[in-house]
Amino acid sequence: MAAKETQLYTKISKKFKDQMTFPFLEALLAMGFPAHTAQKALAATGRRTIEEASEWLHFHYNDPSLDDPIPQEYALYLCPTGPLLENLQEFWRESKRQCGKNRAHEIFPHVTLCDFFTCEDQKVEYLYEALKRAGDKILNSFPSTIPLNLHSSISYLGFFISDSSADVIREFAMSFATEASILADCTVKPCTKQLHLTLAHKFYPHHQKTLEQLAKSIDQIYNCQWTAALYSRDMRFVHYQTLRALFQYKPQNMDELMLTAGEYIFVDRTQQAEASEGWVIGISHRTGCRGFVPENYTERANESDTWVKHRTYTFSLAFGLDSKESDHNTTMNYKSHHSLMTTKASKIQTFQALTHRRSLLVVRHGERVDQIFGKAWLQQCSTVDERKKGLKNFENDPPLSSCGIFQSRLTGEALLDSGIKISYMYCSPALRCIQTAKHILEELKQEKSLKIRVEPGLFEWTKWEIGETIPSLMTLTELTKANYNVDVDYRSEFPLSSLMPSESYDDYVKRCSMTVKQIVAACPGGIISIVSHGSALDSCTRPLLDLPPRDISDFAQLVRKIPSLGMCFCEEVEENKWQLNNPPVKTLTHGSNSAFNWRKWIQDC
Image (cartoon, rainbow, N blue to C red; front, side, top):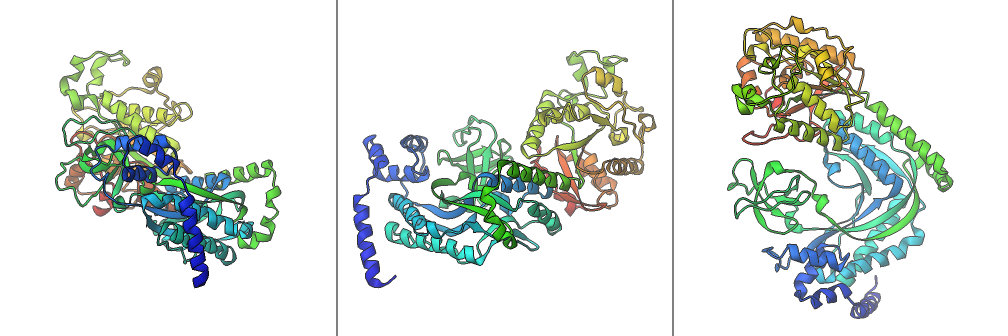
């Protein structure tokens, strides 16, 4: 822009600024809030409503940083909406389920237009005007179809925008940067690199092929409205870990934070010297206050979950994923609803076809009742006599405690939220394992559709069982009578009568190896779940990984560290070649249990 034009433009912009009014700010000032904190509240809530801003000020009353002149950071993204967004979100879910979480899962589907920049709280309204002006300038020249090319490397998968379309989008980003500089006095750096929509980033190399297959199954054409969205974040917590509270917590001491379910906590992992095991020092996103937080009340969240969407500018266009199809794509605006539904059904079938690759989820049972009440637990309670030989048989085959039932249900609920659907459920004949499997399936909404296959070969190492005989376990008839949905037609290659008391370690690992290989061979695809004992997490995964049995002393030490509902997850990367990967959900810890890290399985191999 020439010097004279710049001066004229600046003069006009100054006149525009002088004419702007700020009704939200005036309303907050009328309530008695200071101007600088009112501006901060409006910036932190996206200037959506007076109610949200005043509520933010109420919660941040004790925030020690309330008066600090720290601005928010802003970024501009181009985001898909409607069916295309749903399509990409389904890819997000399926890629996470099959390959574990990668960096792309930490943020919503988007194309970055401008890197993060700061803007003073009192000038944010001018950013909104800058967005509107930039959008209006190129609206008529915005392409009706944007061809994308799939690009894949050893650590990145995404769609690259073709040059012709990218030039127009860059022009929009440049225009926004110029407008923001003049109106809001911001230094904005528009993206000059290859414009792209990331699908996966920093994943394990052996997952590349699977991710490519999933990406190719995304529908190639969808009518789509693209939206330029302005987001903000708190720049103080960019390098912090973000946690989400799972439960409400009432502080027991003055230095603890009160938690409400769903709120976010920022944690600096380098500043935890004062925290005891099981606790972290964090800062509440809701209140800005700092204090101790019980870590087992939280789960890992994404930083982008705390971002605030301010304003959007929408472009309407058809969208194609293959540049060779661009001429054809221009006619797709006339596709009927039936055609879109057919395409979506085809996509779902493709996803389902990819799930035929086998996965194995091995889970330890929940907390057992005798673990809490000791050997005399049976004399301290009463129950329905479900066994032919009376209550005495419960002594060596105890059920879950109330906490164990809760653990099992919580794990099942988490698996449901992760998108997991179990194809086969195998279980040790121990009652605590069958109960755990039942409660997990109930939370997965699969308790009626999926029968539990009771597999004696998955029973605990009998040397660790009390007594000189195998415990008298419930029969399939007794389990069915007690409303357990067991598969009465399933026949194991390792019948219950073949279990030997006080078997040797070598016999035990051979039994587990034979059993798990037979189970996998009988299941052509999908997720196979095994609910067994802590020892199974080692003895039922090492055979698939082609690893020899551990030394017996190492085995015993390792098993002691496995918490209730601890889990390991193996995936078949090639035919009969398995890899240990991230479990689909975070392992539960409670009480004095230390955090269970599945990665130690690899380190100790």
